Image 1: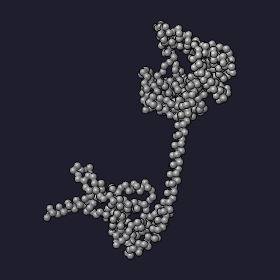
Image 2: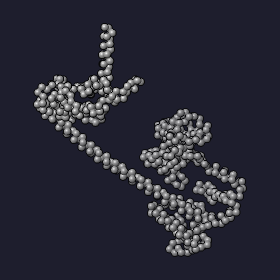
Image 3: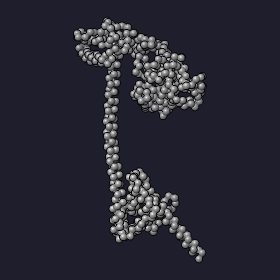
Image 4: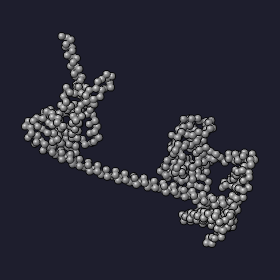
Length: 554
């Protein structure tokens, strides 16, 4: 127990799965720096039971734990199954368990599957809600696949058990097979093939009609075939191998000495075996009467290679392994192709984004240069032209003139709010705003010194439409929803509204170049005009009330 605790405490610092030697056994996970007896809420993990699997637990925070599962027997690259218990919980304690060393790239957890859970008071297995389960690839754990799920403990006295899916133990299988064997059914027979690596019995079940049993025994499992000897270092040049125990295990699970070259030689040998056997099977079906004669004839023609007798079970296992490797290679190639296409698309997007960024920088520089030129012209040229057109210009107020001079002396790129007169035509004391709209020149100059967008828009609307038109119109032509019996009024002219927006845009563009701010201030034009219409109607109503009051007094 002490050795197990030391291993779990140093696991996160080492960062390797090789230190996982066995399942945790009543392992208490304590916070860093804590000394003393465990309290409620200090979780105790256990996986020392049949079908249990949990090799290491790391304490990340009060609410989060990293779990490391052990690999399959004799297959260290395959890590999927987990089954463990948790006790010493606190009521309403919320935790997140991260199973951080999954080996599968694709899992049903992505499609709605969820881990199983049960407790001592609720012994029936139930699934955790799929919305609390996440399966993803985590760069913090050497890019392994991580399955995270959140859970809330609701009873302190319960022991909770979590599993990958419904567990089915070896003991339960043996009990089931014993019950079938005790029935003495004619169509069922149970035999022992041998022992597993962990010395467990491997059963062979035969389910067929009674008259076909003898034929099946003679033709299927009792045959041995001759095939070329595989290029594996651990296969001894011997005669007929009859024991499938230690030699078979050493052949399948021993580590290769030569690395990559050795594995390539093995693949080539298996490919040659498969091709030769397929060819021999085709010849045997057409030229021979029995499988034994076909194998004997094919073995006589192999003069360049040493012959070895290999059991059929071993041959089928090698064939399945070869097919699985081909399937895995095909999946890897498809994954690489998808990744390549995604990288090409991302490269195109980055290239387009870089072009847009450079174009935006050029536009900003050009905008700043244009503002400098405009500022210089507004400071010298337009003033002379105005003096020629109008002999008696209206002088701005001293405070406004002082403000303009102070802003003109600053080093900012934004010009001072001086009226842009080059755009508008002056003729006979009138200013042409566009679309055939003329306003009084004196009122126009007074409007340019108006402070605030709201007051500027309202005064410009009165200059264009007049109060008599505005009080009988609306901006959109839709009746208000505040009154049930409201009658819609005719809308204002769209081209005149566009003139109002253009004038306000010219005014704002002299103050700022921020497009977001300009758009935000222009979006309030309709609101300002609506307020002006409401003010006119309100003043008209007040005037009517005063007239009616005078009439009543008379």
